[in-house]
Amino acid sequence: MEDYIGGSSSSSDDDSAPAVIVPPPPNRHHIINEDEIIDLDAIDNHHRRRRRNNQPRRPMRSASSHPAIVDAIRGTGGIIDRVDRSRPALTIDRAAEEDAAAASAANVASGICDPNRVRNYKDMFRYASDLADGEPMNMRHEDDALLYCEERRKFLSNVLSTMSVNVHEEMNNSINILFDNNKQVDEHEFAFDVIGEYVDNIDYANDFEKLGGFHIFLPCIRSEHPTVRVKTCELIAKLVQHNPYCQEKFMENTNYIKALISMVENDLNDEVRIKALAAISSLIRENNNGFWQFIDLGGKDLIINALKAPIEKLKIKAVFIICSTSHMGNDVAEMYVDNGVVEIISSIIMGMEKNVDPSHHELILSTLHQLTRMSPARVKEICSSLEDFKPALTSLRDSYSNESNHQDDKDKILWLMESLTL
Image (cartoon, rainbow, N blue to C red):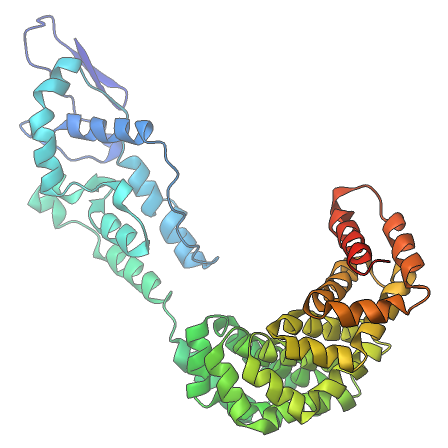
């Protein structure tokens, strides 16, 4: 009868004698007295459960590429290395397994670490704290426990503490930088990037407003540097998109929306104009009150002029606003129809085969599709009066290949031709 631990073995000529458990070799750093009894069955059961339950675990969130964290977790002598060295391969006699079944539960209750219970860095730290040289603390003598290296515990504690960030302090410092006119442009840009990392979270976006962050908008919009104006528009778009609280707070000061409208109409930098219109789009989508307030401040003419602009990206932003707001009510759709939007969209479609990037075709067709659904009689009347519209739709449909990525576009064209009886 033989029992193996990490490649070592012992044998007995008398099968009736109890199984002899030979300690692991010295190079595993296990400190076990000859008279100390260890329940290897509990450990083996744990490994067999791991093999049997081959379910994927919830992935642990990455701790970035911080070298100290990587070394603490994956380096030689690190957490994972010590965990791996605490799992020697064992072969246990079947009779010994049955005899130790009751003792297994007792050992689990006594606190032997279960790596399956590690779910985050705090759990891993607690698990690592119970290990020294690859062995659970409760498997060593008190004298050996006193030899445990406190420097390792302190090191892990310090590494974990560096992973926490005071978000409010970070945002407040960035706001102060943006208020400081003596700072360089790259410092302002970096401050925007820091804030942008956090405000994708709706709670932090609301906290940004409560910290007084909205007060940076007007000074930054008036900046002489285009990159600062672009960053301001991008930040506004992040803050207000699908965020009723920030949308309401932004619209409370009409100077903000007026400044964005002025940027779209008058800024000399095309990218600034595009980003400003994108910020307006984020503000008014799914925001009925904000939409009509924007229209009252001249938003209708802004959209029409953007549709006619020679800048394709600006034109596409305007099309997107129409497509995403026309479903908000028949009054919205009728406003677009009354102000010539159907004619403009139809003219874009007629030249779309040659003049518009194919990636935008679906959006433009969807916009006319949406207006047709909301106001079928008016749109049908307008499109029927356009002499070249039907041939243009037919030519556009035929220009698409039979590949599946064009199927949606072809289906929309077919639907339009049937609905408009072209």
